[in-house]
Length: 133
Image 1 (cartoon, helix red, strand yellow):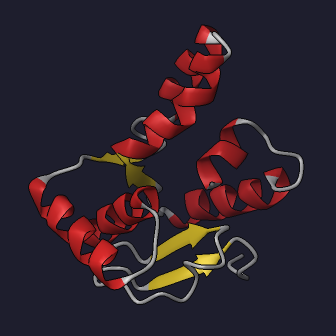
Image 2 (cartoon, rainbow, N blue to C red):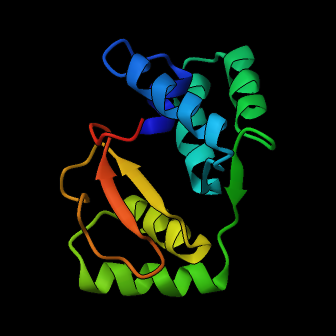
């Protein structure tokens, strides 16, 4: 997950994530995700009782750095449609439904199962290895 790689500075992906984020900032793009992501990212620090890290994560995942998408009834409906039509996990369906509702241009993932899927409202679903910048 892009956010975990970013916030935990994953050695394998940290340079790629920085390149993507720097490019987004230079273009004026908006990084957005569902509020569900924040819960996923905070789970590890809370399990390890790393409350300061949890605070830093919450600070990093708010405006102006990240636009947090709420889980609404419209998104719940999209979620159900995605789960009915595609063999994806509930967590992936929440992310895809939120992105589709927000009409994102690009949904980045490291999950090969998701790349190239056609989800209404999302222009492109691509892997982290896509040539962007």
